[in-house]
Length: 119
Image (cartoon, rainbow, N blue to C red):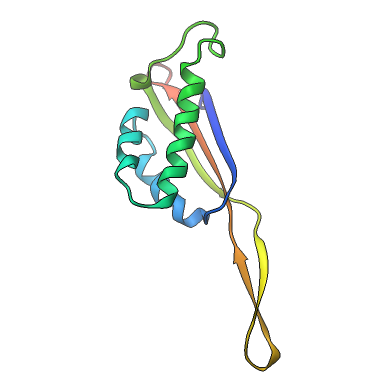
């Protein structure tokens, strides 16, 4: 059960593309995960990086933690899930009057952080 969470709903990228990066950083410390994603060339790495920074901001904010903010070095990414979101459906004309469906996929990026002393 993660203590601090952040989400990006409706990210305009396929969930399959971001899941590869989520598998890379799951279980890492938050600062190590941000360093690892910084050097990844994929567009989904930027999106995942922003969500992790948001979760770290929630954890380091003293107003949300009853006056005891956590340091980024002691936070671990425990829940990193990428779920499929709604799809934009478009029609592509094809030969002989037929049509093919084009699905422009989106995803929901969820990140959960837990302090190392609570694992």
